[in-house]
Length: 128
Image: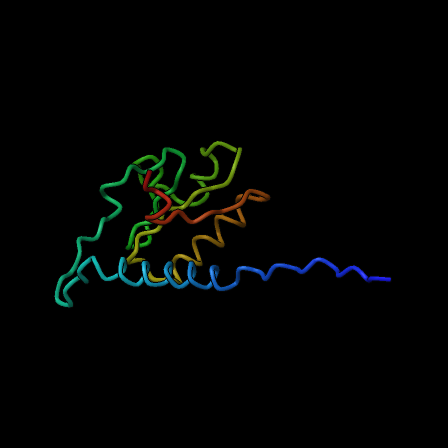
């Protein structure tokens, strides 16, 4: 009686997989070196909020602590009274505003807004 041999399994192509991964690694290393690095003394232009359009439903908090609603001076109480009652309350603080002033104004707005959410809008949030 002759026993039949079980079919031999073919070896997995691990060497081919290693070669592909190695080639990809070399490609990305070379591709990353094609672009010249930026010189150390070069300072790139920084976009400011003046170039962006201020949303119509946002309060602007200036560096001196004053509030603007649609381009006119406002205080937290009057701004909450005239703002639409739907959706979050958006606040655009100036980058030079001290943090303690921002926290105080945001806390007052949150207190007056009731269940509405107070969101800080940043420069990145304004870009289209």
